[in-house]
Image (cartoon, rainbow, N blue to C red; front, side, top):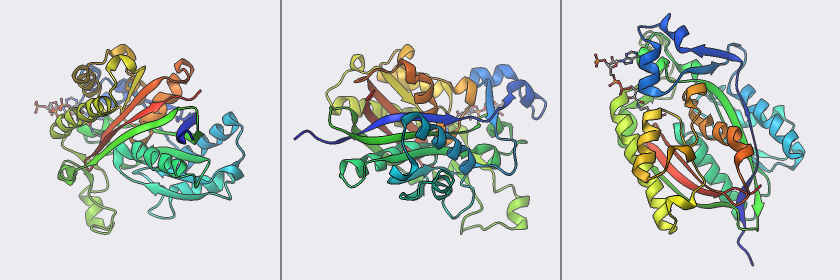
Amino acid sequence: MSQIRAAVTGVNCFVPEHRLTNTDLEKMVETNDEWIKTRTGIEERRILKDKDKAAAYMGSQAVKGLLEKTGTSPEEIDVVICATVTPDMMFPDTANLIAYENGMKNAFTFDLGAACSGFLFAFNTAARFIESGAYKKVVVVGSDKMSAITDYTDRSTCILFGDAAGAVLLEPNDEGNGMMDSILRSDGQGAEFLYQAAGGSLRPASHDTVDAKQHFIYQNGRPVFKAAVSGMAGVVQEIIAKNKLSPDDIAWVVPHQANLRIIEAVARMADFPMERVMVNINKYGNTTAATLPLCLWEWESQLKKGDNLILTTFGGGYTWGAIWLKWAY
Ligand code: UT7
C-alpha cells in the first residue's frame, strides 16, 4: 500500500491595498531608500489601515478565496491551524474566528506561534494530521498584522515588516507527492534578541509597559542575521543530504522573507542559483507567518506536478526548519 502524504491542493493570499514605500518611511524616521534597499532588499510593504480589521480578517479573506478556488465546501474542512504572532486577541484563537467567518462548522481550530517559522511549524503539524489518516482536509493559515506591533519611530524595525495572510489546503495524496520530510528546530537562547516584551502573563499591559514601548517588536538585528543564515543554510543542506538529493533535483527554494542578504547567503551556502529561489520581499517586506504562502501563491502558475520544493524559515525563539515538499498539481 502506498504511503499517504499530505499535499498542497490550493493556495491563496490576501494583501492589504495600502502600500508603505521607502519614500514614505523617509518622512517618518531617519532613513533612506538606498539604505533600506541595499541592507534588506525591501521597497514597499502592505499595511492594513482599517483599525477594526486584523489578522482574522486577513486570514478569513485568504481562506474564503482558497475554498472558492479549490471548490471546497466549508463543512468539509476538518482542522484549521492559524500561525500568527499578532492574533486578534489573546483568546479566542484567530483560527477560531477564521473558521466561524467562513462557516467551517465541522472543523476544530487552534493557533500556533513559532514567530516567523509559524507557517512551517503549522504546515508540518497539519501534514502529520493528514498522514495519520484521522483528517482529510486541513487548512493552514499564516496571518500577521505586523503593523499592530511595530514602533514607527524605531528605524531599525519599522522598515522591515508588512501585513498579509496566506492559506493552503492540505489533503491526502497517494501519488507520491506532498510533504516528503521535515526538520524543525528551536533554541531558546535566541529569546533575548527578538521579542515582544509585554502583553503576556509575565508583563500584562499596564501604563508602564505602554510608556516603555514594550508592546512593540524588539530586535537586535546582527545576531539574528547571523543565526538566520547558519540556521537556514544548515537545515537546507541537512534535508538535502538526508534524502540523498542534490541542489539540481530541487526546482525551487522557498525561503522566509526577512532580508534579501540572508536569502542570498543561504542560497550561496546551499549551492542554489538565485534564479530558483523565490524572492518577493521587495514588494511585501517581512510578513512573518505569511511569507511562505505569499511566495507559493505568486509562483503557483510556474509550479509543476512533481516539482521538488524546499521551504525554509528562521524566526524569533529561535525557531527554524526546512520542509521537502513535492508539488501535487
Ligand atoms: O524574521 C525574523 C528574523 N529576523 C531576521 O532575520 C532579521 C535579521 N537582521 C537583519 O535583517 C538586519 O540585521 C537588519 C536589516 C535588521 C539591520 O541590518 P544590519 O546590516 O544588521 O544593520 P545594523 O543593525 O548593524 O546597523 C548598521 C548601521 C547602524 O549605524 P552605525 O551604528 O553603524 O552608525 C544603524 O544605526 O545602520 C544604521 N541603521 C539604519 N540606517 C538607516 C539601522 N537602521 C537603519 C535605517 N536607516 N532604517
